[in-house]
Length: 267
Image 1 (tube, one colour):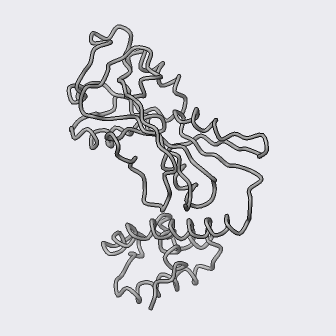
Image 2 (cartoon, one colour; image 1 turned 90 degrees about the vertical axis):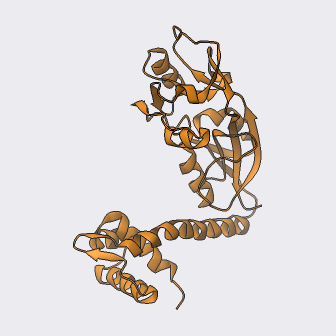
Image 3 (cartoon, helix red, strand yellow; image 1 turned 180 degrees about the vertical axis):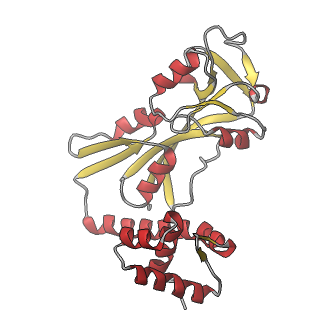
């Protein structure tokens, strides 16, 4: 039997909410229909996917979740791509952008279209482009030179990409200000984790191949000026494009860049 996407979506919803009844309300099914979907899926795969009290994934269910969410996203992306073709020439444009990519997004604003610009984190932007909530998305982050950004596999096309130099933002009285440094020398420094604006610190450690980069402060905002104010007040360091760092630490190693990508669905 082929795995029914409806049953897969029901399974993901039950696992996320930890409740058959809550999943039924969200999906618009009866609770018995939700139970039936899970039962058919378990029979199809020959494995128990959810414990019932409490409701949580089994080992097999956790493994299925790793596959299910990307599969469902790709199905949503396919539906959105076909719908876009069927709709014909657009009369509006929905642009998503991360905070530091707004300058690139401004280049797409056209008087002939009704334009909406949404600022969010890069994974959110990528998912909404893939599922048709946005027409295009500008996302940025830290990457090795000529490498793509680390994003979920959603079948998106990188239509264009830009790279620029990085710098570590530091307070004005920092003893190493205006010097060139090796990033690994700062792994034990106080850092600000600002995942909407900068590369998340755990990702930065993976890219730089260095342990450390532990946050002294979490910043959930999207305002770059607010982040720089926190740096200036001595609350931690931040890795940013050189163009937004008035004075900071130039980066010698590793060979990293600030990369911006224009994402779209389809060709």
